[in-house]
Every structure is written in structure tokens, then in C-alpha cells.
Image 1 (cartoon, rainbow, N blue to C red):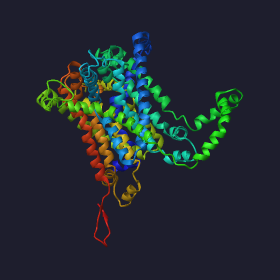
Image 2: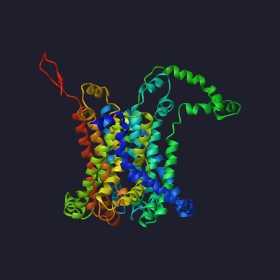
Image 3: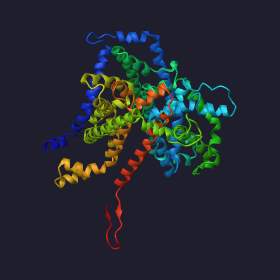
Image 4: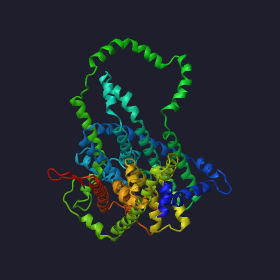
Length: 594
């Protein structure tokens, strides 16, 4: 009990279990990896010189930046208007659309990549449809090129862009835009001058996440692209398999430096006082020069009478949307949702095909490929291993992540920001770099090719998800309840178990679900640390995708796609049960809360 009392007086100590795992598996190894890249103890940059002296490396590096930039731009162009329309929709429709975005986000990226192979291959849906219509005689080269890489990566990363945008847009006061409209501003002007600047934090967060994650993409480019579409993560994986640790470390830190550069630029607060001082110092110099802004203001004098008439006619007039505008919005959102959901639905339907190969629409319905999955020990054995690892990761990550979130919630701001940055580092850096660091750390501990090693490696990222979700729940927690429990002589442990934990239970369960899904779908880190004896379901699925198109893969992909739906139901039930329910008492008697 004295230990808990000391921890209560120093809440940051509750983050020690999480920090210990992160430092042992990721933190210390990443430092050792950096020293290896510098040829310690000689300390030279010869490895980096060798990297940039090879034109192939430089070409792949710029190719990685180009692909990541194009995917980020495409996600922003598609995701921003979609998020805006979701937020503007009625409440029930908004909830449905948000869930439809979350489901692909939680679905296995490998399964969704396989769905695009089914659609774009020579015997895929598009080519078969065009042949049946008599439009082509030979299959179009839709797969194994840069376009297919963009299609697959944008499909996977679009929810990552949209969710931060929706979150930020939900917090914008809509009355500000309405006020601008009532004062005569056109809808587009009100949007650009009022709404868009307030949504920039979501744009910055979504773009940062998408770009950094794309830098470490490995599976999707390797599955959908050709030899000329390789990204730097592919080179890192091949160098690691050749046991050239110096080259691997150098390539990993080039990629990491690029990611940190983007984080340092997009992570800065470019608004507020930081931008005001330089603006004031340059004001006098700019006023002496002829500028396009001055020209624009001069020309605007000619249209001032027209603007005044329009402003007077539209003053305090409520803006209404035309039927054409509503239909165009509906069509746009429908197309985006179809793009997100149709590949998964297609694979689920084709997995019930009764033929000897995948076909759409199926000539008959059968569960033969599911029987093949459950009848093959290599398939269900891999699924059992993945399930065992995911459960262990969920338990470990939820325990230490909840303690860390509780400690961070009560810590001083400076310590909270620093420790949070450390905990979230593994999920904000390229996953291939995390995999290399985990490989080095677990190799030092002798845990390569072991269940314990895979569990620890998965927990490095899963802890971050738990901390984010539980911290969000604790942000709305009323600490006066804890003070009331203490005033009733309840100890710290008793208060946490009887007061705090029941109220934050939905966040804890949500964090556990995300940790489970993160582990169950993990393939990049697993490929580095699992060795040859630990074959998880994603690894087995990836091997079969690369070697052969076995229709059993469709059944496996369908199961992976349906798993997030099951967990969403569990999460909803946990949230619904946590809501206070009022017991209806007979007339004349006070009602009590259950």
C-alpha cells in the first residue's frame, strides 16, 4: 500500500513499465543502430557516403518521396471534401458514414491489398468485365505498375487522412460560417475565409500521418508494383535479409531522417505569435514595392458598386443548397465510400464461389474455401498463433498503456509532453525502421524466433494506441470523484479499481481492441523478428499471395475483413453498458440510477 501511495504522489512513475518495454525493444536499439551506421567506435560517415554515391539508392529515395507525396496529395484532395460532407450531414447519417470510414481503417491492409490484386489482375474483375463486353481482346496491364501502387496506397491511407479531418471539423463552430453567410459572403468565400483556416490542424495532422506512414510502406508497393516501383523500405528489408547490418542501419536512418524532417516542419505551429513578428518587420519594405496584392485591390475598386448591391440583397438571407448541389454531394460521397468498401465486399462475395477459381459474380455459392482453410493445419495453425500473440499483446499493452495514460493525465505538462512523444514514437515513425530496431534489440536479448520476442515487438506500437485512446477517455474524467473517494478514506488502489476504472472502461476496452487488431494484422515487424518457426497468419497470407493465387486466400482475407466489424460491435456494447441507465420507479417514488 505504501508503494501505491508513493506512486500517487509521483504519477509519472506509472509510465515506467511502458517506457521500460519501449527502451529495451526500441529506444536503446535505435541508438545502437545509429552508432552502427556511423561505424562506431571509429565514427565516420563512410556508410552514408556510400549510400548516396550509388545512383540506385538515390533514385529509390526520391522515388519513395515522390510516391509518398502523390499519395498524400491524393488522400487530401479526396479526403478533405469527403470529411467536410460527413460533418455537414445529419447526425444519424454522419454516424453511419464515420463507421463506414472506420471499418476500412481497422481492416487488414494486407487483405485490402489482396482485394486490389483480385480486381486489377489479368484475370481480375475489370479485365473480365471488359472482355465480356467485347471492349478488349487482351487483358490490360492494370497491375504491377505505378498506377496500381497509387490506387492501393490511397485506398489504405484515405481513412488515416479522413479521421483527423473529421475530428477537427466536428469541433469547429458552424455558427461562424453561418454568420459570414448572413453578412453577404458567398458560400465559397465563407468556406475559404472562415472554415478552412480553422480546419488546418486536421490537414496538418492527416498529411503528416499519411506521408510518414507511406515512407515506410513495404507490402502494398511490393504486391501491386513492378520492379521499377520499389520503395526504400523494400531495399532495407532486402539488406536485412542479407545480414548487412551497416547498410541496413544507414538506409534506415536515411529514411528516419526524412521522416523526422517532415515531422519537424509539419509539426510546428505556424499560426499565432510566431508568424506575427516577421510579418510586422517586413511590412514597411513590402509597402514600398509594387505587388500583385496592390494591383488586385486597385482593380477591385471597379466592382465595388456591384458588390455593394449584392451584399445588400443577400444580407441576413439564409443560404440554401440547390437540388443539383445536393445530388452532386451525394454522388461524390457515394463514390468515395464505394472506393473504400467495394474491394472488401467483392472479396467476401468471391470467397463463397463454388467454382474452381475466383469469379464474380459467383456461378454458385459454396463454403469450400472456408473448409479448405479450416482443414489445412498450416492455415488454422497460423491463425491460432496470431490469435495467441494478439491476445497476449492486448493484455500486456492495455495494462501498461492504461497505467501510462493514467500517470500522464496527472503529470505536469512538460513531463507529459516529453513522455508522450517517447511513447508515440514507434507509431509515428516508419514501421520498417521500428522493425529493424526491434530486431536488433531482441537479438541482444536472444528472443528472435520466439513468441515472447514477437509479443514484445508488437507491444511497442500497441502501447501507443492504448495510451492515445485511454488518454482521450481520461480527458473527460471528473477528478472530483477521486477526491470524494479519498475523502471517504479509500486508498489509491481501491479508488482506481472502484471509481476510475469503471468510468474509463470503454476507453480501456477500445485500447485493448486496437492493440489486438494492431498485433493480429502486423506483418512488417513480424517478418524481422519471427525467424523461421513463428509463422503468423499475415505472414502465411503474404507468402501465398507472392507465390500463388490460391482461392483459399479469399476466405482468409474475408475473415480478416469481418474481424473489425465484430470488434466494433464489442466496443459499442461496452460503451452502451457504461452509460448510466435510469430505473423507472413507481409514481411518487424517486428514480434511481443503475
